[in-house]
Image (tube, rainbow, N blue to C red):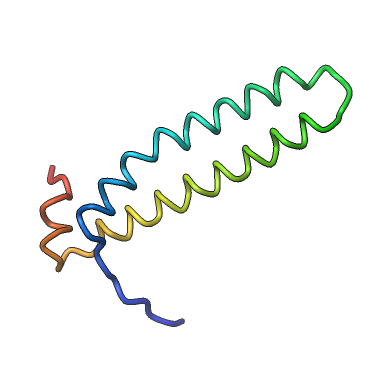
Length: 87
């Protein structure tokens, strides 16, 4: 198995990723709502478009979550130490 180098993100990038998470969640919820409301109608273009948007927002949210998780694991970086919440 190949090892991957853990690289912490810049503080600005972390802030941007944290700000965009609610946008992705909102897009996922709206797309899901459209799919549910269109379920009783004939399958057509709106359902396909809503499904594509749901898939895209889900993929973007997952990618963002993985990037933030990997950043938090890079404990040797001072940026990661400052931005990681200690419990």
